[in-house]
Image 1 (cartoon, one colour):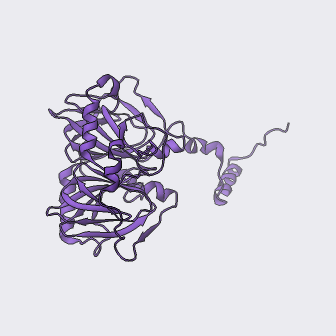
Image 2 (cartoon, rainbow, N blue to C red):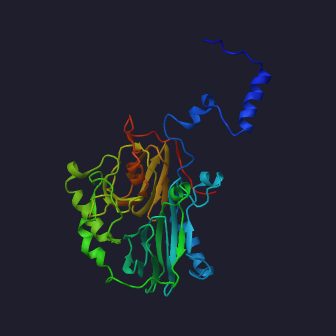
Image 3 (cartoon, rainbow, N blue to C red):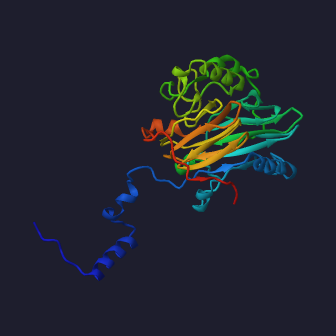
Amino acid sequence: MSKKEVITDTELKEYYDGMKNSYLGPLWYDLGHMVTKEPVHDVEPYLWKWKTIRDYVMKAGEILEPGKDAERRVVYLQNPNLLKHGLVGYGTHTLYAGIQLLLPGEFAPSHHHSQGAIRFIIEGSGAYTAVNGEKVYMERGDMILTPAWTWHEHKHEGTEPMIWLDGLDVGLVKNLAASFFEPYENGFYPEQPPENYSTEKFAKGAFVPKGKKEKPGYPSPIIGYKWERAKYVLEQMSKSPKENEDPYDGYAIEYINPTTGGSADERIGSMMQRLLPNQHTKAHRHVHSAIYHVLEGKGSTVINGQKFEWERGDFFILPPWSWHEHVNEGSEDAYLFSFNDKPVMDILGLEYEEAHPEGHQKIEKVFTPGP
């Protein structure tokens, strides 16, 4: 066996500089950056107050017309740290959240894209989303699916502003270099099935207690998941707390595909949680990231030792592999809707969950939103 050659510092520098100039690299120095001991990311937790969001959304209603001045009238949530890395429009490294406004009499023309999308209705009534020609009227608390490559459009027949959350897997699709977009050539896709057909046909089987769904499947045949049904299921679950209470999420249901038992959308998971007054969940962490919206209630979520205080309408980011726990600090039930990238992590065999060794975190600071 030959002896290792002894070279000077100058020769060693020339060796590494030459390797760099040839777009090569020494794994013995960089392995720790490439294969980390646990998840490493640039996503930071953040919280947006609903009043701030709504003010900007309503102002957009005064200056933009959907389908004319813009494809859609949407104000998106920007993760501050990801913006520093040039990732515009990212909520997490995989997920996008935007708040869309449609005023009475307005419409947003039909288009489709390779990104999957969910819509969660925040405010208003009288508008509908049409998916491949099927109309579903939107009411507060409903979730509407527009699976990847389905033609979808929106029209408002009501009298008050209509506001909803758009949740898409923008970051995931962009990082995989798989983004496609196409407007419908005639503006509106032809109306086909009776309105709300799939919602009424499948609605009773569209929810399941968290953690009890089967393996992931294809997008759901349901377009609209009704809030009144989700709330009813959660209320029934709380009647048997020993059986149905999740230590980390309270009373939680996942929106599913009733024909497969898998996630409603094949790439975007969705969940609704109910926290009773003073209910305080235990802390845990998992690989998947999530974006939360407070449908009802007042409380806080502690993320990696930082307390995020929320109330009705607020949004907050849960980064991957971050300790988190929730507490309802109000006198009424709290309802938290969230969407996540867990289905993708499950399919790839990358999902992993870990309980906090002490059950709860020590609060080190309190988050204050602002620049």
